[in-house]
Length: 463
Image (cartoon, rainbow, N blue to C red; front, top):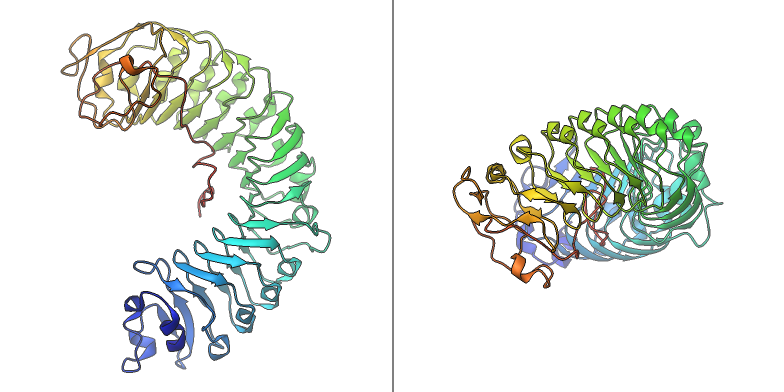
């Protein structure tokens, strides 16, 4: 360990590692067993971040090491094949570093490995099929790299012990991987942000009956959303946004009462928003943006008392803003921008949505006055009102509750003056008052799929 320490940048972060101090009681990040053998090395997010490589780490000198956690540092170079000599290793976490090169197939020899996390690095080349033969692996996360499947998946074997599998944000193509369909204990599956294509398999509920979180967003899947998905009785999170799915929003989704998140946006689905979605009482996240919908907003959505995030933007929605939506007291982010909605924003909306952070209704045809209760939206950071010609009467700064004014609502992070409407995202220093109604250019920087931009960063359901 001292030889490896000497090869690292920022050695002061490991200043306790000296010959003069006992390894097991004084060395930071090190744990030992009763015989004094090192069993755990946990240096996650260490200070300013360790730099250097793993080349000087002597695996043969650590026969009892069960946990190696170097997550969230800046270690680079390749992953040494010599790590396969750590025969006691059960957990290997090298996520969020700067490793490059390929994944050593020798890691498939770690017969005791239960948890392997290599996400958010610069790893490239094919995923070694040897990893599918790890007999105890339960958690496998290779997301956010540059991995490919040029040799396809025919050499992969089923992985019956895996419960968590993430391959998101790589360069995987072809149809839904067959070996995954034969890995029947998966509960969390994230294949998002690849170029996988073809239909979503009808056999998913039969093959993967325990799915809780299922993310296929940002691929090239086509066809209808399979009706068989209704049999996934444990599914909490379904995200298939940004594919080529058609056939409308299926009615059966309204029967999946356990859903917490539903992402269908960015598909040419067509059709209307089925009122049966109002039965999803556990739903917190609803994304149906840019889905070629021709519809009104069903008032039944007002039954979804746990809803926090709704994006229905960039469709052909008509009619008004249902007053029933004011019952959604947990609402944090709403976007219904770029539609054909008319009428008035319901009175007292902002008073009834105390958690509101983002309210985007631009590029519609709403009319009426800005209500003074806007001043009570104390958490509001993003406010986008209709683009000019703007039919909302402008308001002036004032005390909350004074007619025609908007009072203190905290520091807005995003707003612009109507006089600068043709300068998208016109720069203003955030202030303590919202000083005008916004009539903004349709250019937006909304981010979707949870959590996140589509950049090379780790953005899953939760870890």
